[in-house]
Image 1 (cartoon, rainbow, N blue to C red):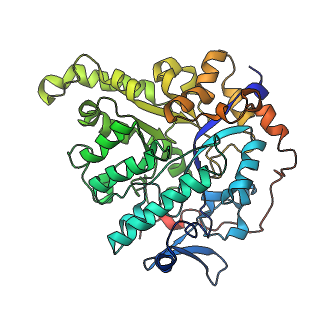
Image 2: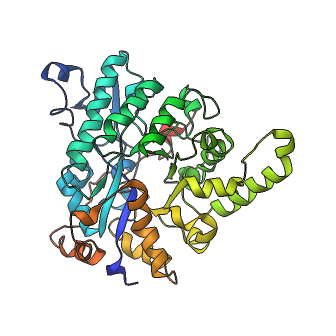
Amino acid sequence: MRTDDMILVSVDDHVVEPPDLFKHHLAPEELDQAPKVIRRDDGSDVWVYDGKQIPNIALNAVAGRPPDEYGVEPTSFDDIRKGCYDVHARIDDMNVNGVLGAMCFPSFPQFCGQLFATSSDRETGLRMLRAYNDWHVDEWCGSYPGRFIPLTLPPLWDPLLMAEEVRRVAKKGCHAISFSENPSKLGYPSFHSDHWDPFFAACSDEGTILCLHIGSSSHLIMTAPDAPIDAMITLQPINIIQAATDLLWSPVLRKFPTLKFAMSEGGIGWIPYFLERVDYVYDHHRQWTGQDFGTQRPSEVFQDRIITCFIDDRTGIELRDRVGIDNITWECDYPHSDSTWPHAPETLASSLNGVSDVHINQITHENAMRHFRLDSFRHRPREKCTVGALRAEAKHVDVTPHSRGKKSGDPMLPFRTN
């Protein structure tokens, strides 16, 4: 398949929320309690909410910057590309990258709404969370129908409220929700308890997919306090194997037989051995551990119910049948430091060399559109959804790296322990 003929849907991008996010989604008297952006003396912009300051870390929004200026220092909106926070500029940046559709994870509320879950007043936290979800579905995604997969946040502190929110946003057409890869790290019960059953039941009823993004446990696994940041970056996606293991051996997938999870930004090259290993463990140990998958093997349950994704993963693509071709999806990760923007089609095409057109279409867009109910072709003809057609609409978009003249200091400083 020619690169220009591919259709790309990314199931993992990110939004840096604009300062006016809450303006149209709260009553006037509630705006004083809403998160606000302020500029600090050092020139960085931070969100302020409930006595907390939440900076935007540079690695979250480095699209368009020279790689030698990547870093973890707080930034301002002046420092980052407009497509990070402005939906109209985002469409330009998607078009110039040949990307038809995207699912955008949050930034300042954290991946599964941890910020709102720690509100000193839970009623206020719930109002802010719902306003955030309304902004994301109605304003961010709603501005360009067919171009975004809506993704909402749950009120983590109450599974009944979580179930209610799943049903509320489902009426708006949202069938994806972000959840923690390891809720026990956040101080909540694990997948092995029945605590989350009302939430899981609502997701099952509505066909809502739970997206477990790496880092959504607010916990980074470090090899050693003095290890270089390269070690952490290397292990980040592979570490999602822990979430996959925890989930697969928990009762969740068997208790809710139609419920699906997505391993967001988790890569796929590790999966063949993982599936081999879980089947081996099941065969050798189930008599005394008590595990029972009925007529299926653990690997079959995983391939039936877990959606996987990758940025660039030649090994996983070569082993795609063993990964589970029906559930493999692709991601761009714009505007994070791992992103392949603005050359995603070329990067992906080199990894797809020798792959059949049928499998290419599944991996690049068909699986994502089916699982997440994205109906882009209802809004624009298929022939206008290709890499070549989208890029033809974006000839005015400048992708030249622009230096801000700011070099990063010690890249591990925020992560080091005393």
